[in-house]
Image (cartoon, rainbow, N blue to C red):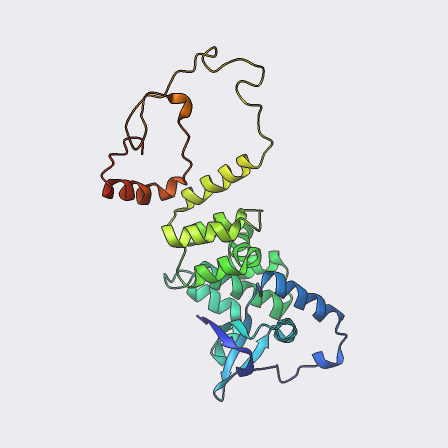
Amino acid sequence: MPSFQKIAWQLLDPPEDNVRASKPLGPLEELAESIKKHGILQPLIVVPENGRYRVRVGDRRYYAAHMAGVFEIPCMVYDPGELSDVAAMIDENVCREDVTAAEIGWAILALREKTGMDWEAIARRLRRSLDWIGERVNIVEADAAVAHANAAGQISFSVAKEIAKCQDGEFRPYLLDVAIRCGSTAVNIREMVRNHRRENEPAPPPPNAGGVTLAAQGITAPDYGCAFCSGTHDVGNMKQLYVHWYELPTLKKILQDAGLEAKWL
């Protein structure tokens, strides 16, 4: 199976039969702008050659990356013989534990780019379902950082799938950071996405919006006290403490180290 590497642009050589220089620059400029905003979503396919690397698939990304000022390029490095049949290579490696879903997704995209096959033909060639193919392709097309984290072994396939499903492009980097830093599971990430979506929906009116007091609604004082003095008096002057649930163990340890029992955690 090929290896995922980030390679300096200066070490890459364009395909020997490249004719890109004679083609209009407009589409390349559009791709360069996309790379500036989103990064290189699909790595280049390269092979080692005389201490350097020859681009075999992805020459447009090669040139657009230079136009975008990106000089460290994500690449899938193949042995020259591996590219003779990418599909066979995928077949041989899908069950290996050290091959990540992102690497398989990139290989599938390389197969499509190299052969022009449609998704149904690829599914038949690999003897896999469209869903199986779509899940792996989606994580590498949805977010380059998520795919790179999976390829690097920082997050599992199941976690990568849940992050890739998040439609909020500004929230995904936060999810990825939490997943890596806190070791979140797919269930954790799914719950975070659900809560984030819920929090961004229009807020309901406050409980006493109609002038009805909390007491009149039968809402009593909490059965816990102040985290610092343990007092249950003066409830009106208590403030709710917001904290991410996955940060609770850290907060609890801080309070315990400070000599606080923190029953409310």
